[in-house]
Length: 124
Image 1 (cartoon, rainbow, N blue to C red):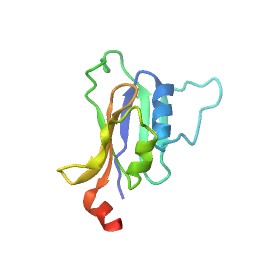
Image 2 (cartoon, rainbow, N blue to C red):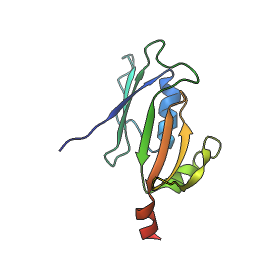
Image 3 (cartoon, one colour):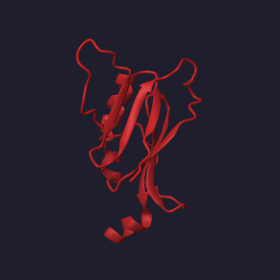
Image 4 (spheres, rainbow, N blue to C red):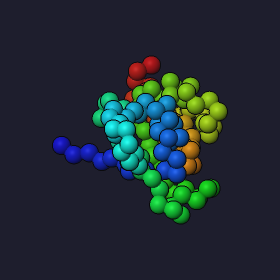
């Protein structure tokens, strides 16, 4: 078994963690009081993981964030409803075969949320 986990640099760990909490990712363990809290491991409880870390100065320039993430989930519409003001466009079937929407996290990381259109169509 193997898996890949993204490590995402952030300018404000608290703001980023709150954003990803809305996508269903939580931090099961917190460091004891007084310990440094500059690396956060989030999980959706279904095998999805995301690690947040303090950005090195100069990595995240406003308007020029090169990072992006794709969250595959059947719950596209439910997640879209949690972000009415942040969504770029709307959840829709795309020509590349995904039902998806896009938004930006607090550091302008592109986050696409989607599910294959053919699998979605099979359920309805």
